[in-house]
Length: 330
Image 1 (cartoon, one colour):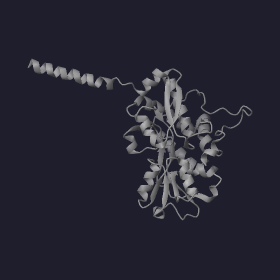
Image 2 (image 1 turned 180 degrees about the vertical axis):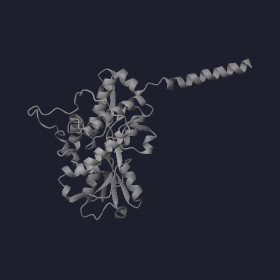
Image 3 (image 1 turned 90 degrees about the vertical axis):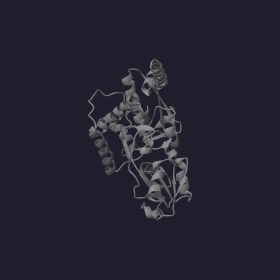
Image 4 (image 1 turned 60 degrees about the horizontal axis):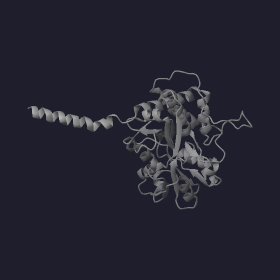
């Protein structure tokens, strides 16, 4: 009996030793507090959510969310945190998080149940969905039957690729690693349509010199919420991220100047993607729906703005996207 008891104790000790490294593993918040660095990932070409200018600097609606999150983390941890931004390709997003190369990704990522098995999603702070960019004389209406036998460009591993395959299995999906390559293939007649988030297509049409030859087909294939992604099982980080996003959306809905300036910089009348009044109302309504299920955040003194400084020669100028970005749309 004593031998059996001793054997059981030995197994318990081995078991405890085996799980100790997991139990004591450092969380993202602990590592950020220790190192003073938040490692973030974003996209190079996902305008207006995330893109880089000709100097390699990151800009966009989601990048502004990253800066809000960074600011909130600094306040929570009681120290200045450095924000390091790395650009990642669409198919690199999940691996970069699961392998610990970044702590958070905010670009144009949308929720899927498959992705949710590998990462955790924040609250959605934007709405998009799969649409088709086509030539005006293509005869493609967007209805599934109009895609029978057509060649549709998409990026691999995106919800856009999945949407086309779902709604019309008899269409041929042609995959490209770069977003610019999909537009070029359409211009050169190598594909009949480009499947992408509708906001991306609006941005391309708004600034491209060949825009008059193309249009966005009317039939939407999906409606998706844009959110940030963080590693699984990091509730402290996710709580801070969600608080920052909810605080921002609450500010937009209630008309706070700083938050409205961020929203309008990317979706206002003179922005990268001007929204119609209907689409603007839809965006605001989605924010309200998200906020309806969360406690209101108490008002507090305004913090330092994440708005980029106005040009020195015109201090009163309205902030606009950086010089150089239109060339990235072509």
